Length: 377
Image (cartoon, rainbow, N blue to C red):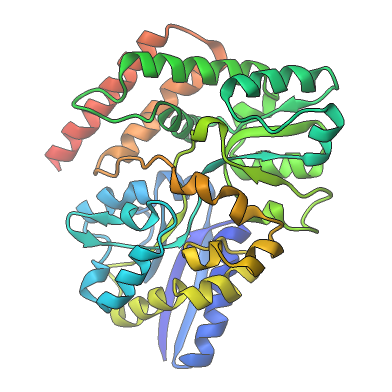
C-alpha cells in the first residue's frame, strides 16, 4: 500500500473536491491511500511552504512558487508528467492560472482551483433598493449612497493580504525597477480603496473573503461587495438563507488567486503523487466529482460546462471574463515577505487615512528589500 498525505486549506472549497477525487481515485488505484489535512486560510496565504514536512501533496498559492523553488520544497512536474498532460493544462488554463505556477523554466504545480477577486451581490437587496450592479468605482460609491438610504451597506474584505491584492489589481502594478507602481496610478488606487472603506461595513477591515461572503449570505444588511476572491460555494442553493450572485469587479480590477497542487520534494512516493496530481486536475474529474463536491475547478472545461454552470446558478459564466483579465502578482522568492509588509502599511491607511505618498514610498521600500533578500538567498 502506498500512503500519500496532503495538506490544503480549511474550507469546503479547499478540501471538498480533493476528498471526493480521492474516493474516485481509489477505485482506479486501490493500492494508493490518500489522506488530506487542513490548515487555516491565513496560514495558506502567509506560510504556504512552511510547516509542510511529512506531506506528499501540497496545495499552495501561486505567489509562493518562488519561495518554494528557492527552498527546494517541491518537484518540477514537467520532469515527471507526460508532456501531453501539461499541454492540456496550458491550453485549458483559466486566465493565467497555469502560467502562475511556471517558474525558472519549469512547471511546479497545476491549477487545481481557479479564482480571482470579483464582485458579489444580493440581487434581492439591490432590486429592493433600485440599484444596478456597479461597473465602475464611481458606480460603487453611488451605489453605497443609494443603499445607505435604505439602511443597507456595501462591504469589502480588507484585511492586510486582501488590501494588498486589491491595491495591486486596481493599480495594475507593473513592479518596474524599484517601484511597485507609477505614482499617479498608486495615488488613484489608494484613493479608491480609502473611499470605499470609509463607506463600507465595519466588518471589512477585519474579515477575509469567505467571512464577508458568509455575512452577506446569512444577514440582511450588506447588498454588495466590489472585490473579494470568488467562492462558488456561496452561489449554491441551500448553504445559507440567501445565495449570492457574482460579477466582474469594477473596471475589471481583480487580482488572480486560486490554488495549485504540487508534490513535495521530500515525498518518498513522487511518482504516485504526480499521478494523483494529473488525475485530480484532469477535465473529467474537474467538471465531475471535484466541482460536485464543493471544489472550485481550475480546468477551463469545467468553467465552460453548461451543466456545471447551471448547478452554480451562473457563477462560472458570470465571472470567467474577470479571471481571464485578472492581474498576476509577482512570484519571486521574497514576494511573500513584501506582501506581508505591504499589508501592514496599507491596512492602517485604509482605516485611518494618511499621506498617500508616504504610503507609496514605504511600499516601494518594502519591495526593494524583498528583492535584496531574494539575491541574498
